[in-house]
Image 1 (cartoon, rainbow, N blue to C red):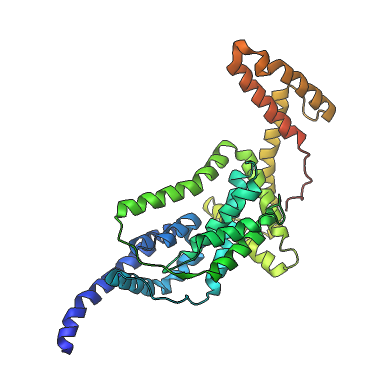
Image 2: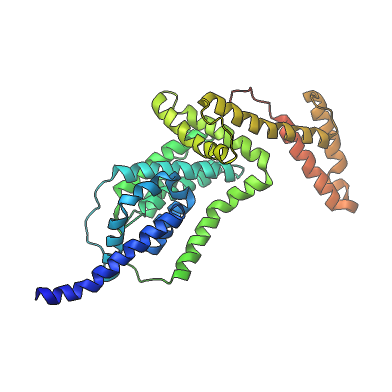
Length: 356
């Protein structure tokens, strides 16, 4: 009997060992892009890694010890094809912390990409934060209630309305609600790889498309807003120095990697010096933008506010599309340039260290 059982189990164990080897190879080759999770059918985890580059690299490294359990879980799900048992999954502080962090991350990306939209802080921001929390909640064999989680995000959106700090209570409320309504996933019918890749591709484009548009088509404003948003975000931790230093290290990590790649030997400089270099980089774009604005209005740099307002009113009367029906397209282009230039010059220049 035992020999027959061994013959029956041997092919299954062989497939599991083979799956584990392939998983480790995919983890090593394309781990930060979530290839090993895609191979194991963990699409939510794969999307999370695609959008965060393997959790900033830390999650990818930490998974080295978790891959055998992931493979075993995938093989059990493939062999049984039945609903997971009832009950509630155990509470995980790691998952809760990840929900908070990813919710904040999605909120910051939304601030950079969509903050120009009307009612952004009531609609766009809670939706982005809630989706980030739900993405982490759906990792593995668990999930959470979609309506309740998003409902908690929308209900807390009026707190700190209009300020980047609003991300924090929204993410906290959504994460608590997602943990409260956590449950095991029910098994669904198998899908083809093309369908899964199509769905993941749409989700990836929905996340990165607006961010890429902002970075490429409005680089100066995007860099300025990123700097101001990070400065506001770090100011939240002024009462917790150790946590603030940790967050600074996380934010400065991509910048330090970039400096290593370009061969800058000054990576051992202090936080203050690194923030100063980032400020100078952003400040150069701001100066260039103001110079172009002065040129668009036909003014010299340093013109008084009264001169800027007077010149703006004059040019608006000249190039208003209703007054130039014989050259509508050209008038529309000049009119938009004048509006944009006036908006830039109307914003007061902030002191040197105000965003840090």
